[in-house]
Image (tube, rainbow, N blue to C red; front, side):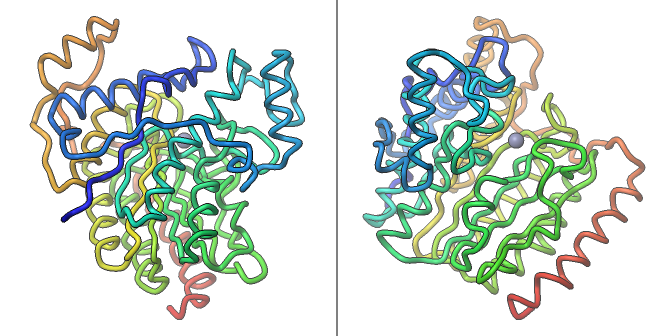
Length: 381
Ligand SMILES: [Zn+2]
């Protein structure tokens, strides 16, 4: 019998809210869940209630001092800047410890099912790729991705390909596995010279045994679907085929979309869909342990909902209707939203960027050539 896709979700996840005016709004998750449910996709998945990650589970990656600092900030509501707590990006909020531990717990319920043999999951609250071993960063308190990969590798030694197309560099995950040759990290993101967290250049290619196993494709601001697809086809695909991972883990942040308010990329649903279908084909061909998909960035809640619902449909071999259901549109209006696309897919496949297109292409040509020259040889390419 075909296994059901695991979908960790409950309304408790909506408590991860820094402030009402903070861009990481719980509506991103609420709307995704509601829309996916509305068009019937959740009938085909197994929705699981996330539980809080235990202290031991958090310590798979994080230092005990850092976990104590989150606990103590939670109790006293006092910032602890050296641990990234109470900053502009990560302001303290009531029960921040439980909220952050539940986010990790959500991804770990999926990870545990993978250890037992599940092969597909989409955890929309997951993907907190900036959290470092001993520091909260970029809206991320604890790093669910690293904890999940470590938990699975401890139980079932395997080769993991981590693929991240969030607009921001997946720095926390890269750093965690920088010296590992069993986790290949590939991040396609807006150039760090123009966007948080500032890292993710080609020369960050791993160290020791892990040299050649951290791969970064920094794109110029304004890069769109064409560049995303090129970076995927010319860098990720050949590395995927040579590395032959047992397990695929993806961070599917959609803040590179042209409607997103935080980054400066211009991806469209066409680019995302093309890459998602490519990922799916590769996972089916190579990854005997399957595909653990996680959310990530994306700060236009309605846009996040339609894209992640589209992604879920692709994972389930289903399609989405042309338009968002009227009932869902009414629901959004009742929640105060007025300006949003009503189609599932963007009408235009390509959106004009910020720089002349030839400059964007020339920059990408150079980046691809450098990766091919400096990193591909470590993989026999
Ligand atoms: Zn992001």
